[in-house]
Length: 151
Image 1: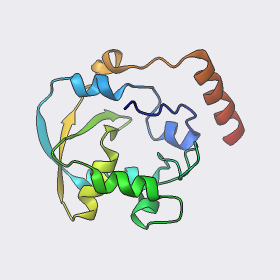
Image 2 (image 1 turned 90 degrees about the horizontal axis):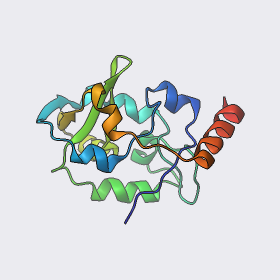
Image 3 (image 1 turned 60 degrees about the vertical axis):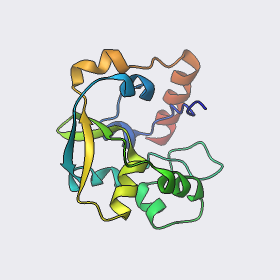
Image 4 (image 1 turned 45 degrees about the vertical axis):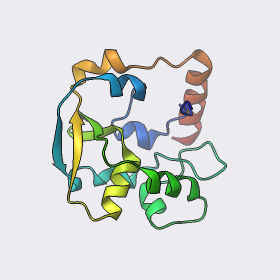
């Protein structure tokens, strides 16, 4: 089953350092060692609306809201419950912070279970060309319209 591709990134997500499009499957194929990291170094992600509420296609749901089980977060609650902690969280340093490329549901699950450390793979920035996903013109136009209207 393929992942749903959303490209209408609001300004808050771009400001969080996630200002390029990547393909998670390309990230998974990279060969980097797994190491441990303090979960507190990644919790800032919980403040950003990376996800969408049930039956929407918008960036309108934060991990904190999923943790609090607000209405409209059922889909992501289920994803968190099913998150496999045997897989590391893929991260990349950008603008002075570690950014999650893949594994936000796993991070939330680890947090809920009281973990102090999580397994991560640190992907160097020089690998961006290998993981880039180039959105088509229609996706870029949607992204532009969204950020112009929501800024």
